[in-house]
Image (cartoon, rainbow, N blue to C red; front, top):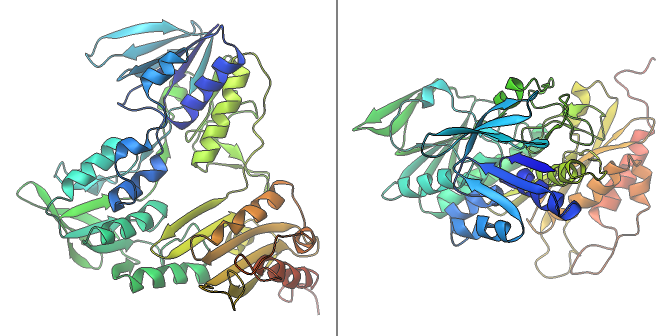
Length: 455
């Protein structure tokens, strides 16, 4: 059996190693168009900020190591076409020469690309996105001598980079076209807390602003023209979102879902026989809503890749879906979420109710107790747990994993209220903030919705 994998980062390399383990006799070949495989892209902002020594530290496996384990890795080889009937791919090498390769099973792990608006396509130096190690290296080079950075986009990458660049001594302007930062991550009340943390650390946040053009001086970016006027800067980072790489899949007749990502079964199979898909280019199922979603996250990609690798090699595995868990930090504020926010639940037409609880992350009388805020959301009437948002010290917001576990099994808020959580003063209060919030929400979820109930 010849298993061919397109893409050598999270999903691709997880699939390769798992396929080889499942079927040691299989020939596994990975084609990667870049210079690196199997690296932690989520660590890129932390290299730029100085928390991680170098970009090389992010590399988990080298091509040499993978070849030693029986996986044929070919760098700087771009797959440009798929003939599903003949079961062949077209590969373009670094020299420009192209050739054909056969496959018995094919995995598309082509990931996503950073969105680059038309106004960013000027060719001027100092304009960047951040998706891979070469992007990070290019930003690092641009920071030499730079004094003022502009970040466009107030999502995960933009917020992490705001901290990283401030730590490098740059003044930072963060531009967001929405009404607040973290707009697609948190409910409005919690978005404001994130912005307060940015304000405290002297990040110049400007929301409700559209970027219209880039200004250039001597071939290098000098600022951006916005709906609110000119903003000057000598480094510009565009972090306005990502787009799944599906062109290769479409050329093979592979179906694309309503999310814009590749549609698959829970075995990671596409609609085309012998072609699989996994990773950031691929849809998954949200276990809370039972709807197809596109949520490109590291663990999701790795887990999808493992499932695809087992199945391509003749085994049987299924991807269980996701619950939308995410966590990040900006300066001294940790931010975590899982499931649905109140805003998202309302948009889906669910009769949802939320409660907010503020406390300390461990016993208030114990040294270094820090504030923590929790929002829990449940379905009114049924009491089904829908989601949570947590803000606090970065070490304390990992409590979100308790919520993610319960969401995965479609538990009710009462189940959380009855969980036997560990307690000692250095770690939590005897009644942890999650338990307090669960008790409060259990009562609230039993009350009728005053806005919709009949008099």
